[in-house]
Length: 383
Ligand SMILES: NC(=O)c1ccc[n+]([C@@H]2O[C@H](COP(=O)([O-])OP(=O)(O)OC[C@H]3O[C@@H](n4cnc5c(N)ncnc54)[C@H](OP(=O)(O)O)[C@@H]3O)[C@@H](O)[C@H]2O)c1
Image (cartoon, rainbow, N blue to C red):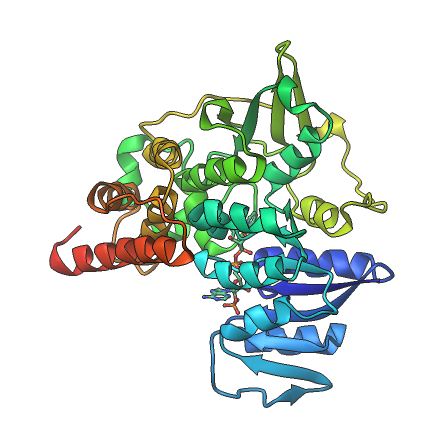
């Protein structure tokens, strides 16, 4: 029985993880979890799973007291690192959103945990630092992002020298068929209406402009050590094929499943063992008319910015990510237009000097500069 610490239990990946725990009660136990502000969800998780510890990371007020039922309650974001490093925990699932995930991720690596990592912003922003730390520890990262989980499984079947390229598929997001000139007037509600995946608001907005795919290109580079020149992106509106690898002879191997996070979550929890049966009714015959389309960089300018930031290295990916986190928040609060998001990212990348620090602080400072730059820019001038 593996003890699971689930960070971000109230979100979309959190819910998929809870589904897997319900499916396999004999294999996994919810030992501890966090929510940020959703106290009602925390109560219902405690009532259903009876974990040892719960964290309400967005509050220092003792909203639920020190105990709810028999579960001990901690408050504030520092407690995320505490539960992620408890001796009894075997696997930490990082399903919180944003680069704030770095602190519990470091705590889990320090304690040699297996980490089922969904929180891509952390890896994108602090990739070199995390990879250095991983070299000194026996912790492993198992990707939960569906594309990376697919690639993780595909890459295990080939010798590294036989890989010519890897391909991440992208649904194309909410506006893939909208004329480009209409993108500046889309509403928040339209942007949140993803065609194939049900996800949290930030990643849904990221997907609409392929910023998400840009983050994933950088995530793939840090996870698999593959150079950017060998990482491809293709629009695949049906979201059935999640990742492909091309071998030196020009053949493509692909991983396919219904667009349901239950697959990568179950794989990452069972890894290195194989997943026990997941009964699914849908069969390949129902996967009709699968398309693969080259992305149009005019429609998705942030994708090429992400490649450039990744190739520049150092703090550039963290600046890209931090600027995007701020810009998405401004868009969700109806302060800027959808098309302002890549403009703001680009201006942050132009303005803030790229550094190649060896300390965590160096990466944090660059990301903080990007955040302040976007906030100040917005306050000073109409975007
Ligand atoms: N959704 C997907 O299918 C999917 C797929 C691949 C990768 N991912 C990645 O997985 C991560 C989570 O995505 P999601 O779609 O599940 O997001 P989500 O539905 O918005 O959930 C976010 C979770 O993080 C918590 N949270 C929010 N702000 C926080 C903060 N400042 N500190 C600590 N916790 C905080 C939320 O708590 P409250 O609800 O209590 O506020 C919630 O539990 C993201 O990095 C995303 O890119 C998601």
